[in-house]
Length: 325
Ligand code: F7E
Image 1 (cartoon, protein in one colour):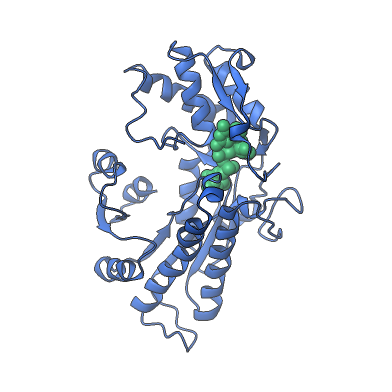
Image 2 (spheres, protein in one colour):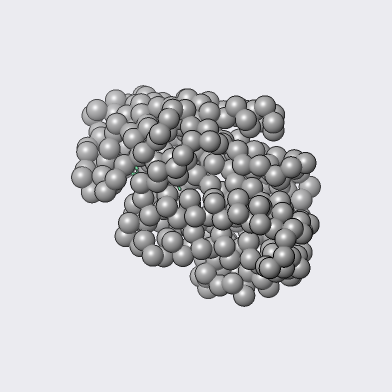
């Protein structure tokens, strides 16, 4: 996101949490032109101070505890960060814009983007999913995101703020965290191909997701803040694949047969699963002129190739910034 905005000529500030935050060094090396400011979604004062200091035209809230299995293990924290964190960012914008909590309307100058998610659809009521499809989240993560989604809508309606949500379906890239399925698979394939490992342990292979390229999705986020009127949009490809197909595609990209290496492990089965997600992105296409450029096979191959290249430096080359789950 930061990279895309810098390329568009934005001055970009990134909010950095915590005392020791290893990805910061990574970001500095990658994009020295992104300025950093300290703040935490759990700390209202720090967010007000950040908005006061930066005086932004636009705020993108992509911050969250976003790994679905973790949201069962730390449900309260997920609610605080992924749910109430949205309230704190909106409040910081409201206060710094001089919008009264008791009087409406008063559209400030700061535009707000909230990263909503297809996980809100959960046990889906219809296929494909649109902006009108009712929500039925299946994890504490999904529930927290529904709170953030409706709160963003409520601040738009209560205060006339330009506050919008993008209902993002799964989006991936070689920079994806290694705990999420596509990166876990691309890294696993690379390790097996290079002879570092023989097996890859996975959970449910029958679930389906609408997987797209993160670089395409950040374009949609920026476009959503550049409209005349604020509105929410579903962002996805409209094509869905099973986990098994993704696994097959990734192993095939390296000339391997997944059946020789994948082992099913109950440790990766979730208490409640989202079985099948598929976006209807026609509103984004018609109103934003947005379309994804990278298809499923190209995405998976890109990720496998990137990990083969990364691990050519040694079996542990991927571990420096990875969260081990
Ligand atoms: O799982 C199945 C798993 O963890 C995808 C987040 O960015 O996208 C992401 O949520 C599927 C699920 O992503 C393993 O059961 C099988 O059906 O890559 P994932 P997610 O849960 O769909 C949405 C849009 C978000 O908002 C989230 O923040 O793959 N699966 N075996 C596995 N998943 C993982 N992680 N690991 C496995 O071993």
